[in-house]
Length: 191
Image (cartoon, rainbow, N blue to C red; front, side, top):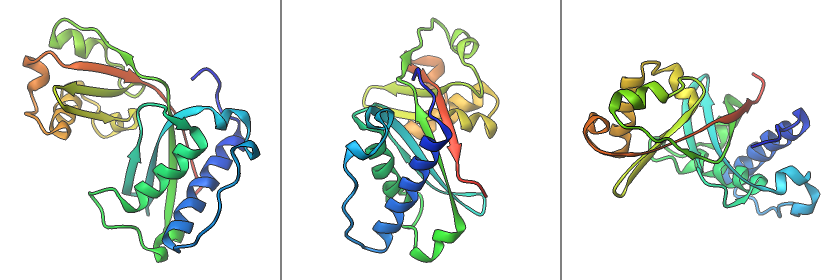
């Protein structure tokens, strides 16, 4: 991502995410505005993660890694998915809307990280900066850069990411995994 979003564009995305959730939970039928009604940067293909917190505690998080649709559409669809389709949580209730806050992470395109040894992999990771995608055979998982706040040790970070993939936590030490990194532009609703 070469261009950062303006504060107005960030706020528009946050409003879009909240409205999409509200429309879904209220089972309203509302036509989304035309793409032409949005700034050009929001019409470009983009990938994002939507994180929903209730009183500071994670309540849902869903996103995309590859940019396959306009950013404004990705925000809209991922917001609804984070609210009602995150399998770790029951669907959000309409009564919870006033208690949640929404965070959007806009992703850069992933780039391949080439490494030779487990130590080399650890040495190339940039805690707090890089989101990491691990892939092995048909397994794939990612952690946003924000996860480094809870898992600042690179070895523990990679162990947990392997577990998230559904594999043994130490497979990153023994198998040749595909590793990609990306960065995010993160913004959230004011409390």
